[in-house]
Length: 219
Image (cartoon, rainbow, N blue to C red):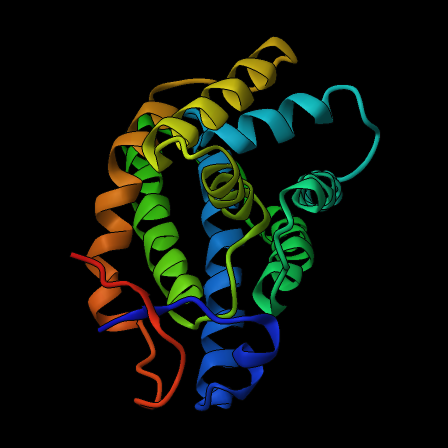
């Protein structure tokens, strides 16, 4: 199964639109659910949520609203990088924040270390599935991944170096603002890649053979 690098217009012309739109929505809602579960587990969150929660200490808005604002700011950074957002990019900015506020309202804090660990592991697995569905529907990268790929194209630096540098900076700023860093942060960093990779084989939507050139095939 292959991922494709499509222009925004080609994303809508690529075929299998109902399935891809369903996967987009489900994937983003799973992202939001996983974020809420990580927060409710109270063992530490992923680097971007460390930043979001740190900002929430100073900005009197809901966490989902802060996620949307940060997404918009990151998306503005695409302009000098000459990146074009796709439908998935815009949906990512809006739906994850809205979904996060809903799931935080629905799910209470998890009590007891055993339940916290189970919630943490489940959240990472759900995030992996959501990421595979979102990436596999060929609607363009999220604002944060697009920042990474845009910097790669402009600077020639490796994806690994840029991804690590961005997330370390985000984590550091979030921690200085009082965001929660813990064992869950480390577990997320170690496990989210394998979790997403595992679900790729089930989640990537195969497009008609005449569509765009492949971007890359997950190993």
